[in-house]
Image (cartoon, rainbow, N blue to C red; front, side, top):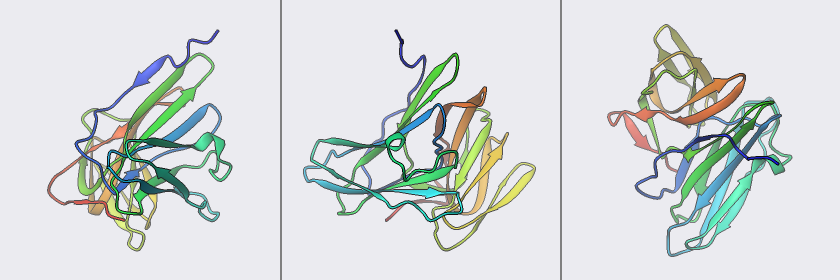
Length: 212
Protein backbone atom coordinates (compact mmCIF):
# COMPACT_ATOMS: atom_id res chain seq x y z
CA UNK A 1 0.00 0.00 0.00
CA UNK A 2 0.92 3.65 -0.21
CA UNK A 3 2.69 5.40 2.64
CA UNK A 4 1.22 8.72 1.53
CA UNK A 5 3.22 11.92 1.18
CA UNK A 6 6.96 11.37 1.73
CA UNK A 7 8.15 14.99 1.91
CA UNK A 8 6.56 17.49 4.28
CA UNK A 9 6.97 21.24 4.59
CA UNK A 10 5.12 23.31 7.17
CA UNK A 11 5.07 27.01 8.09
CA UNK A 12 4.58 29.14 11.17
CA UNK A 13 1.11 30.12 12.32
CA UNK A 14 -0.17 33.68 12.01
CA UNK A 15 -0.76 36.23 14.77
CA UNK A 16 -4.28 37.11 13.67
CA UNK A 17 -7.09 36.84 11.18
CA UNK A 18 -7.54 39.18 8.22
CA UNK A 19 -10.21 40.20 5.70
CA UNK A 20 -7.87 39.55 2.72
CA UNK A 21 -5.17 36.99 1.98
CA UNK A 22 -3.03 36.68 -1.14
CA UNK A 23 -1.13 33.71 -2.56
CA UNK A 24 1.25 34.79 -5.31
CA UNK A 25 1.64 31.43 -7.00
CA UNK A 26 -0.16 28.24 -7.86
CA UNK A 27 -0.37 25.78 -10.73
CA UNK A 28 -2.54 22.76 -11.39
CA UNK A 29 -1.42 19.92 -13.61
CA UNK A 30 -0.32 16.31 -13.72
CA UNK A 31 0.93 15.24 -10.32
CA UNK A 32 -0.11 18.48 -8.60
CA UNK A 33 -3.05 19.26 -6.33
CA UNK A 34 -3.92 22.39 -4.36
CA UNK A 35 -6.42 23.30 -1.67
CA UNK A 36 -7.29 26.66 -0.13
CA UNK A 37 -8.34 26.10 3.48
CA UNK A 38 -10.19 28.85 5.38
CA UNK A 39 -10.59 28.95 9.17
CA UNK A 40 -13.00 31.31 10.92
CA UNK A 41 -11.88 32.15 14.50
CA UNK A 42 -14.58 34.81 14.87
CA UNK A 43 -17.86 34.47 16.78
CA UNK A 44 -19.84 35.24 13.61
CA UNK A 45 -20.22 33.35 10.33
CA UNK A 46 -17.80 34.47 7.62
CA UNK A 47 -18.79 34.80 3.98
CA UNK A 48 -15.70 34.26 1.86
CA UNK A 49 -14.87 34.69 -1.82
CA UNK A 50 -11.87 32.87 -3.33
CA UNK A 51 -10.70 34.41 -6.61
CA UNK A 52 -8.22 32.79 -9.00
CA UNK A 53 -6.30 35.26 -11.15
CA UNK A 54 -5.05 33.16 -14.04
CA UNK A 55 -2.15 34.07 -16.31
CA UNK A 56 -3.93 32.56 -19.32
CA UNK A 57 -5.54 34.46 -22.19
CA UNK A 58 -9.10 33.36 -21.45
CA UNK A 59 -11.61 34.95 -19.07
CA UNK A 60 -10.98 34.64 -15.36
CA UNK A 61 -12.88 31.84 -13.64
CA UNK A 62 -15.86 32.78 -11.52
CA UNK A 63 -14.92 33.17 -7.84
CA UNK A 64 -15.66 30.39 -5.38
CA UNK A 65 -17.90 31.13 -2.39
CA UNK A 66 -17.57 29.69 1.09
CA UNK A 67 -19.78 30.20 4.13
CA UNK A 68 -17.65 29.36 7.17
CA UNK A 69 -19.34 29.04 10.58
CA UNK A 70 -17.80 30.38 13.75
CA UNK A 71 -14.88 28.16 14.69
CA UNK A 72 -15.29 26.20 11.47
CA UNK A 73 -13.05 25.28 8.54
CA UNK A 74 -14.00 25.12 4.85
CA UNK A 75 -11.87 24.34 1.80
CA UNK A 76 -11.77 24.60 -1.97
CA UNK A 77 -10.03 21.67 -3.67
CA UNK A 78 -8.77 23.04 -6.99
CA UNK A 79 -8.22 19.51 -8.26
CA UNK A 80 -11.99 18.97 -8.23
CA UNK A 81 -12.81 22.23 -10.01
CA UNK A 82 -12.98 22.32 -13.81
CA UNK A 83 -12.83 26.11 -13.85
CA UNK A 84 -9.14 26.01 -12.82
CA UNK A 85 -7.01 25.77 -15.97
CA UNK A 86 -4.36 23.05 -15.91
CA UNK A 87 -0.77 23.94 -16.65
CA UNK A 88 -1.28 27.70 -16.25
CA UNK A 89 0.07 29.68 -13.31
CA UNK A 90 -2.21 31.83 -11.20
CA UNK A 91 -2.51 33.85 -8.02
CA UNK A 92 -5.28 33.39 -5.44
CA UNK A 93 -7.06 36.09 -3.44
CA UNK A 94 -9.21 35.20 -0.42
CA UNK A 95 -11.68 37.92 0.66
CA UNK A 96 -13.98 37.94 3.67
CA UNK A 97 -16.86 39.74 1.99
CA UNK A 98 -18.95 40.41 5.11
CA UNK A 99 -16.07 41.88 7.13
CA UNK A 100 -15.55 38.85 9.39
CA UNK A 101 -11.78 38.18 9.38
CA UNK A 102 -10.51 34.68 8.63
CA UNK A 103 -7.24 32.75 8.30
CA UNK A 104 -6.38 31.26 4.89
CA UNK A 105 -3.89 28.50 4.18
CA UNK A 106 -2.76 26.79 0.97
CA UNK A 107 -1.96 23.07 0.88
CA UNK A 108 -0.10 21.75 -2.17
CA UNK A 109 0.79 18.15 -2.95
CA UNK A 110 3.13 17.11 -5.76
CA UNK A 111 3.75 13.54 -6.86
CA UNK A 112 6.35 12.15 -9.25
CA UNK A 113 7.42 8.66 -10.21
CA UNK A 114 9.46 8.13 -7.06
CA UNK A 115 8.40 10.84 -4.60
CA UNK A 116 5.52 12.69 -3.06
CA UNK A 117 5.71 16.05 -1.33
CA UNK A 118 3.29 18.25 0.56
CA UNK A 119 3.73 21.88 1.53
CA UNK A 120 1.34 24.02 3.58
CA UNK A 121 1.36 27.59 4.80
CA UNK A 122 -0.68 30.78 5.14
CA UNK A 123 -0.94 33.52 2.55
CA UNK A 124 0.22 37.10 2.89
CA UNK A 125 -1.87 39.85 4.46
CA UNK A 126 0.44 42.66 3.32
CA UNK A 127 2.03 43.92 0.13
CA UNK A 128 5.45 45.56 0.30
CA UNK A 129 8.02 47.32 -1.87
CA UNK A 130 10.93 45.24 -0.54
CA UNK A 131 10.99 41.49 0.09
CA UNK A 132 13.79 39.25 1.33
CA UNK A 133 14.20 35.50 0.92
CA UNK A 134 16.36 34.04 3.72
CA UNK A 135 17.78 31.26 1.54
CA UNK A 136 18.40 30.99 -2.18
CA UNK A 137 15.17 30.08 -3.98
CA UNK A 138 15.14 28.62 -7.45
CA UNK A 139 12.21 30.80 -8.39
CA UNK A 140 10.60 33.93 -7.00
CA UNK A 141 7.02 34.73 -7.97
CA UNK A 142 5.91 38.36 -7.78
CA UNK A 143 2.19 39.21 -7.72
CA UNK A 144 0.91 42.73 -8.33
CA UNK A 145 -2.31 43.14 -6.29
CA UNK A 146 -3.13 46.48 -7.93
CA UNK A 147 -5.72 45.86 -10.65
CA UNK A 148 -5.16 49.26 -12.28
CA UNK A 149 -1.43 49.99 -12.24
CA UNK A 150 1.65 48.12 -13.48
CA UNK A 151 4.61 47.73 -11.15
CA UNK A 152 8.32 47.75 -11.98
CA UNK A 153 10.18 45.05 -10.09
CA UNK A 154 13.93 44.46 -9.89
CA UNK A 155 16.32 41.85 -8.56
CA UNK A 156 20.10 41.89 -8.99
CA UNK A 157 20.74 41.74 -12.73
CA UNK A 158 17.10 41.78 -13.83
CA UNK A 159 14.21 44.23 -14.08
CA UNK A 160 10.65 43.44 -15.19
CA UNK A 161 7.26 45.10 -15.34
CA UNK A 162 4.31 43.29 -13.78
CA UNK A 163 0.90 44.05 -15.26
CA UNK A 164 -2.09 45.00 -13.09
CA UNK A 165 -3.24 41.87 -11.26
CA UNK A 166 -0.40 39.97 -12.94
CA UNK A 167 2.53 37.81 -11.95
CA UNK A 168 6.19 37.51 -12.89
CA UNK A 169 8.65 34.70 -12.22
CA UNK A 170 12.25 35.60 -11.38
CA UNK A 171 15.16 33.26 -10.75
CA UNK A 172 18.15 33.13 -8.46
CA UNK A 173 17.50 36.19 -6.27
CA UNK A 174 17.46 36.66 -2.51
CA UNK A 175 15.68 40.02 -2.53
CA UNK A 176 13.09 41.91 -4.55
CA UNK A 177 12.61 45.67 -4.94
CA UNK A 178 9.46 47.24 -6.45
CA UNK A 179 8.23 50.76 -7.07
CA UNK A 180 4.84 49.87 -5.54
CA UNK A 181 3.72 47.21 -3.04
CA UNK A 182 3.71 43.61 -4.31
CA UNK A 183 3.43 40.10 -2.85
CA UNK A 184 6.38 37.72 -3.22
CA UNK A 185 6.61 33.97 -2.76
CA UNK A 186 9.47 31.55 -3.34
CA UNK A 187 9.33 28.13 -4.93
CA UNK A 188 11.89 25.37 -4.66
CA UNK A 189 11.81 22.86 -7.51
CA UNK A 190 13.33 19.38 -7.72
CA UNK A 191 13.05 17.24 -10.85
CA UNK A 192 10.39 19.61 -12.18
CA UNK A 193 8.17 19.34 -9.10
CA UNK A 194 7.67 22.15 -6.57
CA UNK A 195 8.87 20.66 -3.28
CA UNK A 196 8.36 23.77 -1.14
CA UNK A 197 6.43 27.00 -1.58
CA UNK A 198 6.38 29.79 0.93
CA UNK A 199 6.25 33.55 1.37
CA UNK A 200 9.17 35.89 1.41
CA UNK A 201 9.72 38.34 4.27
CA UNK A 202 8.27 41.81 3.65
CA UNK A 203 10.06 44.95 4.79
CA UNK A 204 8.07 46.92 7.34
CA UNK A 205 8.98 50.17 5.59
CA UNK A 206 6.91 50.57 2.44
CA UNK A 207 4.46 47.79 3.33
CA UNK A 208 0.69 48.12 3.36
CA UNK A 209 -2.14 45.82 4.48
CA UNK A 210 -4.07 44.12 1.71
CA UNK A 211 -7.66 45.33 1.69
CA UNK A 212 -10.72 44.13 -0.27
